[in-house]
Structure formats: C-alpha cells, structure tokens
Image (cartoon, rainbow, N blue to C red; front, side, top):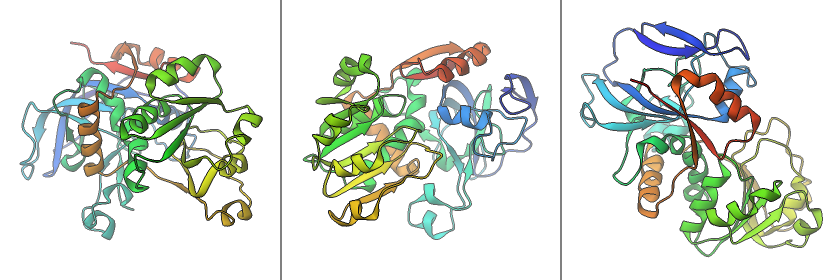
Amino acid sequence: MIHAYAAQAPGGKLTPFEYDPGPLGPDEVELQVSHCGVCHSDLSMLDDEWRQSAYPLVPGHEVIGLVRARGERVEHLSLGQTVGLGWMSASCMTCPQCMAGDHNLCQRSEATIVRRHGGFADRVRCSATWALPLPEGLDAADAGPLFCGGSTVFNPFLELDIKPTDHVGVVGIGGLGHLALQFANKWGCEVTAFTSSEDKRDEAIALGAHHVVGSRDVGALKARAGTFDVILSTVNVSLDWPSYVLALRPRGRLHSVGAVDAPIAIPAFRLIGGQKSLSGSPVGSPETVRKMLEFCARHGIAARTEHFPMRRVNDAMERLRSGEARYRVVLDAEG
C-alpha cells in the first residue's frame, strides 16, 4: 500500500489516505519520496480551478526520490538511484510529437496529479522516461522545484533560441520568476525584473537582475519602449499586455508561462507593426529537463526554499496560498 495525503473535495484539507497502486508496469518505476515541492499548480488542482481534478486528490509533482522498484523493461535507471519527477508522468512514445523528442507536447500524455495520485506520499509511480537522474552538485533537498518550476522557465530559453546578447525581461519574482532570473543571468543576457513588490528589489538583483522595474509603474514601462528581445511572464494574473508589447524590440516576443485564466487582449497592430509575437509553453521534454539540471549544477542555480515535514502538509499549502513564501515550499519525508 502507498500512504499519502489526499483531499476528498475541492479546497478540502489533506488527510491521511492509502491506496493499492496495483502491479508495476513494465516501463514504470516506483520512487520512495524523500522531498516534494509544493507548486501553485497543486493549489489549482486542489481547488479544481482548471476543472480537471478528481477526488480523492493526492497533489505533489515536484518529487525527489529513490528508485525502489522498476519494471522489467527499465534498464537505464538503477535501484537506489536518486531521480526527480515533475508535472508529467508518462507520454505515449508513439505519436509524432514523442517521436520528434517533444514528449511534453504529447496529446496523450499523463500528468502526475491529474486523475492519478502524486507525490504527497511515501511512494509514487511514473513512466521511467520521466524519472530524471539528479546530477552531482545538486542538493536533493532543494531540487524538487526544478522539475516543474525550473523546467517551465528554462524551456523557453531553448525553444525561443534566446541568445546571450538578448535583453530579457522577467515579469513576476515568485516561484517561477526567481528561477527565470537566475537562468537568464547565467545564460549571459541583460536581465530586467518586473515586480509589483518593492521589497523584492534587492532580492531580484541578488538573483541576477541587472535592472528592476515596478510592474505597476506605467511611466517606467513606457520609458522602456523598444527595449526587450523577450519578455517572459511568470504570473497568473492579467497585466497591461499592450504596454509590454510596446516594450519589445522589432521581432520581439512576449512569452507566457504563467497560467493566466483570462484572455490576453492585444490589438493586432501592436504585433503587426514591429513583427512582434505572443506565445506560451509548458514544461520541457525529458531531454530539456536533463539539460536544465546540468545547467543548474554547472552554474550553482537553485530554488530558494522553505521546508515543512510531510505531516504538516496543510501548513505548507497555506504558506504557499498566502503568497508569502520565498520562494518555493518543499515537503520533507519523515522516518
């Protein structure tokens, strides 16, 4: 039996829950959870914001754990090896997207906490394809958030072919944004942080920003018209989108990784005139995650974390819900 914490209804408290996962699939691994990040997507799923939650719901998709069992066809992972698991737990491996290496775009993919049980537990299962070994140099206690938050903001650097000479803006200095600042700085870019929290100015600079702009300062934003090659929005709230498009250089791109649950209204002429574009992306493929982990190990990039024992899972969720966490919350296994 797997012992976990589950909510029985939308917005409910997480209480002890156990389930029998059945036989291990030939391409699966079972992980003994040592740490699990608490992502805002866990809150969204807990509250059924996206209308795809099923209860009982066991959240948790930023898992670090040890391989304790492996299916008969799994040969590239060893028992006892430390690996991580993020938002996705399986992909079909036969569609055009999977065959092209874009497993993260598989239309038949399986998400770790969508209609299956996640990592707020002593063990969790996934396809071995999505269990990525942790390289030397990364602290397992703080690495969980890299597998969702880190992957989400690293993926655009590859997909958009961001160059070291580019000027990159990062909107929002939270769970995603604080990692994006580190990536952009170590990528070699000129980095501007946009934040609504003045008290995060010094932290943003310490994380890698060369400039900090108040996101509510309309005048400061307009003064930067034609400045950015890429603006990466990590927030889940609506912004003054036309002004951010105006801040782009010709052929610049406004790219969203924040789950904004509202239309992004931009007049077409704001895009047409400078051949600008609006786009978005999910977490990266397994190969992108592997590259991201190596990049983090090489450059000393890590999530800033606050830790709670697994038994205090509800306190951890409330800490995240409060918006006061700096910057990611992690649950630690006990015993």
